[in-house]
Image (cartoon, rainbow, N blue to C red):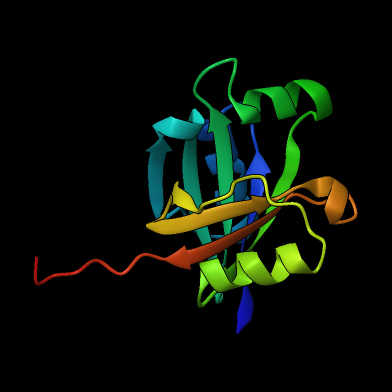
Length: 138
C-alpha cells in the first residue's frame, strides 16, 4: 500500500510560512520539529489523511537553503507512506529509480525516510517514508 503522506514546501521563514498556511488552511500547524542532521526546521499541517510540511533551513549549507537559493520558495518534494521502506527501496531500484541514500534514515515526524533522485522521477524529488514503531517493552 502506498499513499500520499505529505507535500514538502521550502520556505525562507517558518514563522511567516506558518502564518500564511494557517490562513490558507483555516487551522494552525500541529507540530514543529528540528531535524539537525538535515539542517532543517519543519512544521506540519494536517489536510485530511495527508499533510503539508514546511521546511526552513537552519544553516546556509543545508539542502533547503541550496534549494531556495537556486529555485526560490515552493514545492520541494512529495512524500509517499509505504508499509515496508526496505522492500519499496529494493523494488524501485530494480525498476530503475536512483536512490539518494542506500539505507533509510530517521526523518521528521517519527519516520524512516529515503529519497529518490529527481532525474529518475521526471524532475520530482520523491520521499518514501515509513512510520517508526517504538518498542514500548524496552
